[in-house]
Length: 330
Ligand code: FAD
Ligand code: NAP
Image (cartoon, rainbow, N blue to C red):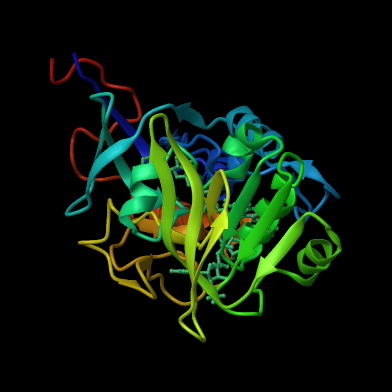
């Protein structure tokens, strides 16, 4: 049996953007529903120390997200563990199908689906995913106690992952295609001072090497991008940290995107090209991609949704009622 739930504001995503939108939309008495998706709490649940969230000199990412969820809930956001598989924005009320079978209808929607780790796309990477190849050091680092590990990438994520992995590994090789890191200076400084980390500059991953019985990684084949020379680095774990791509699957065919799939919003606004559809956080942000900027955009989206509803009122559809309607499509 499926049900239909109507809300004035539907928030899709439970990262800093989604939960902040929940706090603001609740305080505007809009009784929002927030659908969490496959990763409740978003990207910060895959990291350890967060040192740039204002008010906390240091806080564990998962703890911060538990607090944000509790805050949104306390203000009145209804938080639902579901994944939106389809979103129809052709007319109001907008319709979002949940994997659970629930149909969510809403007068305004805030898209806060964030971003996901990118992969290199090598067949050997795919083959050993879950058997030595990972994109999450906090999830899988523990398995490599006393082993050698390589990390691919040169951004904040790669350097943080490399540093974190030294808690377990005997040696971490950071493989980067240039000799300059994108990571913040404070992280670069820690990297340089860590005796367990050895950078391998101007190299890119060509192939993950491994064995089949049991399936596992034994090393990587890398290429010097300047000389073309091929060499091998022995390791048991490969952590790919080459950036994130916006999670735009629900809207990429309908909303304008740019810079590799980020949803376009109007200048100084979270408004998209469809009135009543707002986008916040890493889904729209190719530039800063920080927890605090995502939270800021979540705030903007809720304030803009409030203004939109004040001007345009609820959807015409008679189905638009704040009362949950159960068992419609039995
Ligand atoms: P996300 O956090 O990406 O959350 C997206 C949410 O959308 C998830 O809850 C997901 O389940 C949901 N979702 C996706 N698709 C659907 C769907 N179809 N239906 C329903 N829900 C859906 N930033 C900092 O400022 N400081 C740091 O120290 C820091 N450390 C980081 C460490 C790592 C390892 C990583 C990967 C990122 C780090 N960042 C850090 C960046 C920060 O995590 C992001 O900028 C921020 O989380 C983006 O927030 P968001 O709300 O836009 O989306
Ligand atoms: P990123 O900043 O985009 O860095 C990606 C890195 O991977 C770059 O060094 C890039 O190389 C490299 N790369 C990309 N494609 C590659 C490929 N095909 N082969 C080899 N290398 C490749 O991504 P990120 O580190 O995941 O960070 C994403 C966002 O989250 C950033 O805004 C970051 O600030 C934020 N974040 C913040 C923190 C924090 O505040 N502590 C922690 C983690 C993440 P080039 O440099 O040569 O382009």
